[in-house]
Image (tube, rainbow, N blue to C red):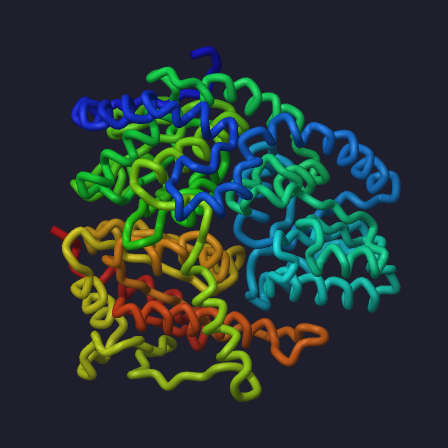
Length: 541
């Protein structure tokens, strides 16, 4: 092996279990076939989808032509004093640019929310020097379209030509391409349509916003190119083959959760990016790997991972990890993409479809089409500034406090289940709520994930509905301080956010999963009460 991009199985027992799967991938020449875009690797049922989803394997070469275009546009923008880049995108369109720019230390304002307060904060930036990258593969993403409408109106109200401030990244032939060209947007980039969203980090979706924000995207491609010869090799030392075999062997032995912690990689937020890649690629047909990004290698759920989870260090090998992956960002992205696709072959799923994502979108749309003002709900009971809304019939009517409801939710989890915390709030102003993840993990004894809504709907939302059905779900919603109209649409951002939470909860409940929604009628007071209720739970064990 010739590069700094590596994967090491540090748990001897897991290494022994993975070895037969390593040999199977080597004998099948799976890595070289994947690099050559062979769509037959995942069986006849997946072949049609895979045949139009494999161009990502050579993006480190095919994206080179974008570099000069992006550099020229960035120089042009800076000559006009436009140095603030706002990215309107969801899922694969936002997570890769965010980790690229955060790691590079360059500023990118990422809008992957329907929270009115967070969008208002983005609008309160310096519009005079702002450009907006509107990024959507389908060109119909409701959140992204809402952001576009809101910014266009804001520019117009300030006497700024919105078309000169709008840059589009989309697939060829999408409604967004047509709109951008008809409206005369400053630039419309079309990406390779044979790349799925979660595998698009090294395409225009990752490179355009990151490059305009000042990240060294040429180095990113260079690092991926350096890793590629090893990743396509049918050598048993291939790091992607070894990582895929380890994950699949663990899955087959009941460790379907992958706990991800940084161990000094120097990369910021990699767990959030790889979470989407793994969950949406593998979580289907009642199978798959649930990624659990945690705060550090000492966090609850990592060092204390039980038999249902595999701790993976992102960075140098850590003594508590079973697996570690190491390398520069471009190399690591390509490593995990290869490994995820190969793990899909071993587990027996199609890693390129997302059959359960649309269900929550349909439910949200149905609720938005209901009474004016969006969906409403009557709480089971109210505890201070927190309304308690169970979805389904799993919670006793006698529950009167938030702490009691939380304990009931934890008790509803099956053995080796997991708890998913889903916060439909402002991930900047309400960031303190993320403390709930380690606290709940410590006190419940369950592997616990934390996701900001609605962005997780474009990633782990697939796993929640299609993966192992052993999760319980804590939704946290809150009254916005003030709402925001979506120009040209019959709903507000607040109504859309509420519909997304209720719609997803509705779909999960239909699959007989326990869902508890805690609605904060006063966000600040409700957050304090919620944290106290979690602390009042008896520690697990």
